[in-house]
Every structure is written in structure tokens, then in C-alpha cells.
Image (cartoon, rainbow, N blue to C red; front, side, top):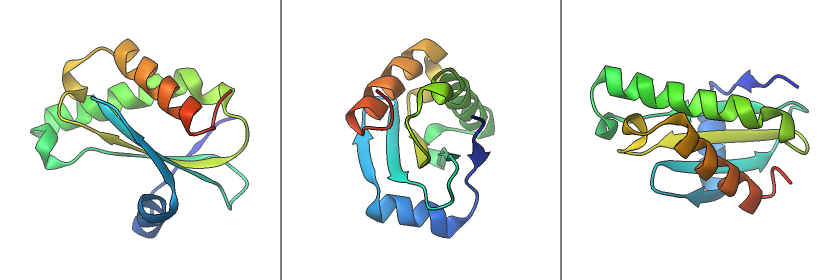
Length: 110
């Protein structure tokens, strides 16, 4: 099942305050059961990450890692991934492994 983009500020804020979260060295993940009946994903990378090139790379790496896990979700969720400082400097496989661990801990994948 293909996921849609989470775009609204209120949706991000709702996940930050009410969603379950898990953090690692390169990624913070917020997860909450979806009200919309579909999976929606948001990716953020703040200015602490670096200039635009590094922020875009961090988002690309996160998007690529999630595309490998997307089919394993057990249900519909709203998910927000927050890039951390080292995200842009690591390979997709490193982020994939952290993301998989986090989503398992949060109960989004089996």
C-alpha cells in the first residue's frame, strides 16, 4: 500500500504531542494510529542538520529507507521522521536498520 505525504502543521503537532516516539543516533520517529484510514508520512529536517544540500540529503535517505519498509506496516499510521545531525552523513542502510528497530518497538511493523 502506497503512503501519502503528511503536510499539515497541525498533523505534525498532533503526532509530537500524542504520538508514541522513539529516538536513535540518526533518527527520531513519531507514530500514531491513523484516523484517515491510510498511511501518511512526514519527514522533517531542521536547520541544525546543515545547509539545504545536507537537509535534502537527509530527507532523501529517510525516504529511501522507508520505501523498503512500507509494505511491512501492519495497519494504517501517521508517521513523522525527524532527521538528526548525522543523518545526511550516513548510508541509507544505517538509517533503514534504525528505522526498522524503532518501528518494531512502536508496534507499527512485526
